Image 1 (cartoon, rainbow, N blue to C red):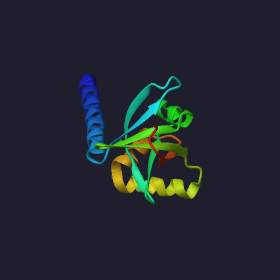
Image 2: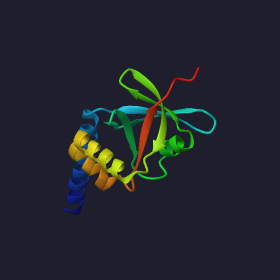
Image 3: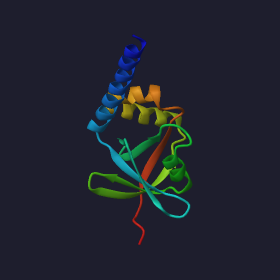
Image 4: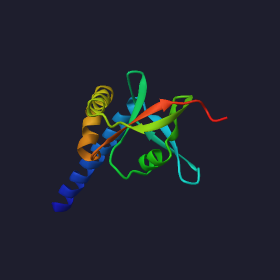
Amino acid sequence: MLRRLLLIALSGIFLLALGTYLAGERTEVAVLRTHDDGGAPYDTKMWVVDVDGSPYVRIGRPGRGWGERAKAHPDVDLIRGDVTTPCTAAVVEDAALRARVDDAFAAKYGWVDWWYGVVVRKHPIALRLEPRAPAS
């Protein structure tokens, strides 16, 4: 009986995780290319929103590898579909703007954004991605 209850619970958790992942993939998922100290590129899939014409991403919790790379080496590339835009990443310090970015994520990604906030996000950091001229 205990084994059956455990199997049911694990199946429920699996289905919830799968449903959350699939729901998160139904809305726009971009790629942010960051670089390490040696210049090696790292591509990370993530959500992106636009506020006042500028793209924003969020570091879900401090210490994430891609987020630390973006803060240390702010020249990044935002890849949306087939378009790659060189950008400079900057941490959003203004509380009112952070709230607007959070509202934009909630509006765009709906309940999945709320759910990620419950299970994944701890002290999120918003990054503004300011387009820059490509390196020559």
